[in-house]
Length: 135
Image: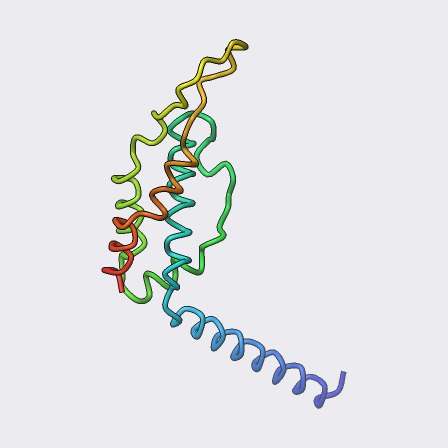
């Protein structure tokens, strides 16, 4: 391989690294969208309560849909993700205990109300206000 081709490859590699670093920094500097933060809170609520109910193992789904949202939160305000996680855990700690009041003759129950309760939390003024205070 000629010196020209080696130099060209080196320059290309350096440019790719630089563009990647700039793109990552730009993404990290972008504030987290309110709806994304609320959606992440919904995901936390569902994951935590299905785990508490015994229907899921810890991190069984390995869903990282809102990973960039957590980076944006913490870049804007260090510790914001941990604060949101604690808030969701405190507000929704007993959702796994709620059951649908119905008789199941096949004895397949009990049936949970986790999804409906987490959706109500997602739409709640408490979550909206908490997210607004994080900005």
